[in-house]
Image (tube, one colour):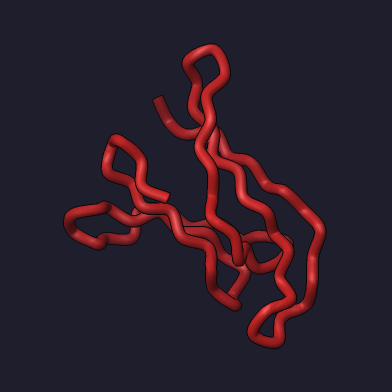
Length: 77
């Protein structure tokens, strides 16, 4: 997922982390643990002008434990 502001969100790793990178430099800007790997494309949505990111944390690939959670984050203004 790439935002209009140049953030790239990736969670398709077996270490159960979601990360944000700077689109042009590749610099890691943020990371957060998930309850299970997020082998899904994150989605961005807005409510009353505030942006949120949500990811399904299902795991079950690459030998990882399965999960059944959705995790949402508020993006900074």
